[in-house]
Image (cartoon, rainbow, N blue to C red; front, side, top):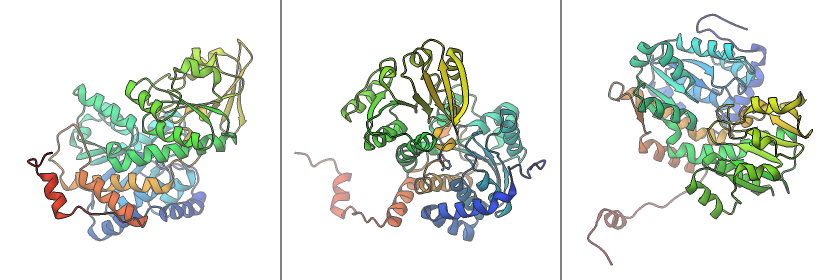
Length: 425
Ligand code: ADE
């Protein structure tokens, strides 16, 4: 199903009713975003703004798109990963919500970049990325459009790392907002969202029992912390591998055995990479793994597991021994290594991504930062900006309220005490 220009390119519009049901189900878990949508409908703060978004096309993203459209944005959406699109949600966004969507689960590299090109052909004033592929393409192919952008939002750690590298090299042509770095984003989405959805992805793909198994968690950033904690919660012997000494110390004091991957490779049953770096699991590790070891990645790009090295070590590769599981039989020792989702992010490829309740906060931050960017357009330098603290506070307060949690307020005396410096011992 393909239209030229900014029309749509989705798998099958007949999937729309199923997609709509899932979008509505997700919406019931996203009250903060829904509150923003109701305000946006009245105030129309994004009226007439052309926005191109490159995000995982899921039911949760659909609710963000509905919110942006309610605010008046003229929106084109493309996928931020070839394997994460939920075709039913994509179909519903087109058929039920009248949006321009370019995303098909399993699309090849050419189609993926053609979809990004369709989003850029929209000539956006604002962009939204999850992993920075749209902004990178914009800088490479249409620098004049990049210079004219009012701003861009970036959803994920990997994207923010790429943007900071661009800024450092003097290559960044537009203001960008590090949505990932907002507290109501990474402290919850990365930790609880990735923690749960990674576990969900591994279990849906394999139906493996975690209890008693040795799980090797590569990377102890917020995502790694979340996954390690949840794997331990299911009774797995959970080992952490980390290059940063402070994080490694934190993992140690959190009670996890910490060791180099080369050592963990010998005893691990399940290996998961969550580092944002390349070739974390490689030749020398595969050669030590036990027969039947499972390897999966939950980082943004499919570079964390050195798949070409795994293939070159193998005498036989059997694709699809189970859905989303490929078996590599090593030449050296005949052992089998099972690779999940071809090394793409296991939580979105094998499950449904983060639960809606956590995406509620991430996407509330996206919507409010977009509004902030538009309201103050022209005042931002071409660099990486933080999300204003007031947005974090507002999202946290409303989320607490929707969870029925009340908190204390500082008394006048306490405020005064915090603002004073004379009172000592
Ligand atoms: N990233 C991780 N989980 C997601 C989800 N459910 N929707 C959109 N982006 C995501």
